[in-house]
Length: 187
Ligand SMILES: Cc1cc2nc3c(=O)[nH]c(=O)nc-3n(C[C@H](O)[C@H](O)[C@H](O)COP(=O)(O)O)c2cc1C
Image 1: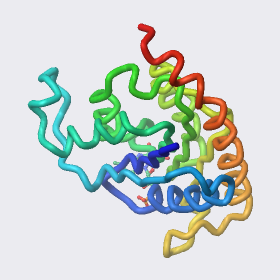
Image 2: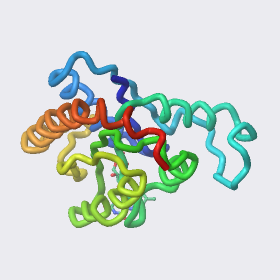
Image 3: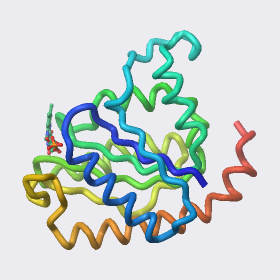
């Protein structure tokens, strides 16, 4: 199975750092999964404006292809202005609503305030629910204080929660194997 680990920001380093950490824990939990990081910072973005897919630049088309070809996702996001970054929402807006249907998704996020973990509950999960993703019940929210100056995660509780997230994600990936294929053609 191909798992896309999406670094959902073009600013900052901590989101990518959490993603690298969770990638390692998923590899530990199931070495057979094919894990690829997609960093939005590597793409030249265009606003979704309703034109046909073929009229967007090659980067946008490549981004859509990589989402479509994946069997599951880890979505990593910072919190910006009490929400997800616009560039991540724009990436979701590029996708056909069936792209992520019945595929496993886990969320990792980081912010500068403790309270904004609720952005995951109130804003990101509803988008993934719209896509009918199999969102794991656990996600991991980190705060600036959980990192050292090199952006390594220093908090052992965060590591434990990331390992647990990886364990559950792998189970959801297994569960989704047949579900995705059987239902892909339904409206
Ligand atoms: C434009 C902008 C808006 C932000 N808004 C919030 C916010 O509303 N809530 C919050 O907890 N952190 C907010 N932050 C802090 C980021 O979430 C924080 O910079 C990031 O998680 C730390 O990672 P970094 O070192 O990779 O930037 C904001 C940061 C930026 C750049």
